[in-house]
Image (cartoon, rainbow, N blue to C red; front, side):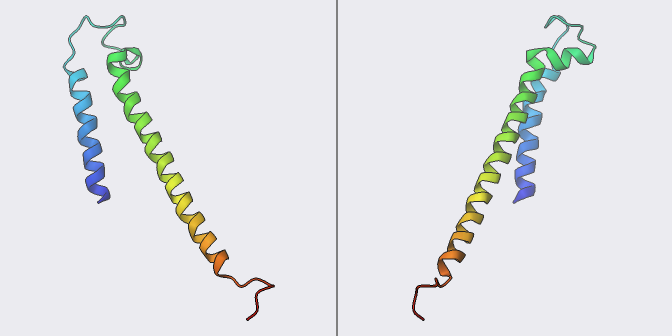
Length: 88
């Protein structure tokens, strides 16, 4: 399951980057042969930012989901304990 998920993410990432790889000289305001061009120009930076933001959203969602699941387990365990006032 996880490998299929990672393969899907890799497919979408490569699909997003394909359009930027076919760019022609003359787009943007920086020299196209520098690292700055790929880091600053929106055509190149936006797909990477989208992947980064999606990853952060997925990580936070996963942490929240695991936190809720753990909290339910703890609440259920506490509810199962006998209290000092309950007759047994």
